[in-house]
Length: 403
Image (cartoon, rainbow, N blue to C red; front, side, top):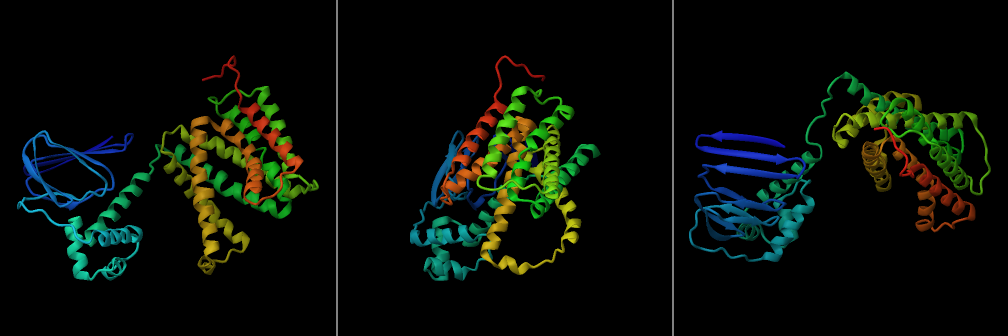
């Protein structure tokens, strides 16, 4: 919970924010000047302790005093102003709502008044008069309010810079970025140039085995390895083998296969480091952002070994741009945040065994989206993989684990 108090002459303004409940609370005392017309994109609840004011909400005036409880809906325009006893009319509501819709959809862009008028079908003078009468504020103030609210939402997602406690914690982030972001992707993609994709898919799936072994030696809070984990590993790997080599020939390529093994091993190290980072107590998004920062730093020198040439013209292609956004935001940023959160809640071993599900999801997706037939081997492999996952995750009630 954060609290800030500002005093100016006879005025006292206190703001309290609760990080858990996501609630902002304001307490104003000694305020005499009127509040300008404004609105919020969330519900606002108010209570008048003492004094008397004139409230204008959606251009209807109310006299409020001590004990009054106020509830404002999102985008309800309101202000505390002097009352002149007159109520404003609300003409051209349909056109003004169209103008507001245009502003909301294009607020990140430079917007001219002519664009709003064209979209609403009104002249400048008519739009301005009707907008102020209906919303109580000008289109410009409406636009600025939306931009401020969106900026606040972004700041809420990542409210501050991550400051580690000491150099050991920072070194953990460095190693996590090196293993999970840089080395894993480099080794996996290089392996694909030397061996078959099916080989890489199977070999990468042994990452949970490496994770379990490393966790046994480096993380004492993890569960003790038992026979059912190794049995589940063998059953799941059998299923993954059937799925990956369904209708294909097994062909060993030592260089590529060894690189894939190395990729699985560094991912296991990343899972262990992520578990360690989760014990620091930092927000998952900020921790993932710091890990990505170091991973990108380690990737930059590697560009020189792959004859990288910047070509920004490819971003002009909508398909390429969409693929990059999907890989960057969906398959990378979002997946890493979810993975790190899962490691924090479940532990490195339990989270890693869900890697067994990757080939299963691939088969199901190909059947549903690509309309590919489900072969007998793929079906058997899917069932075996799910059984292996159940065996690896299942816990007998009689078993006790160290805390």
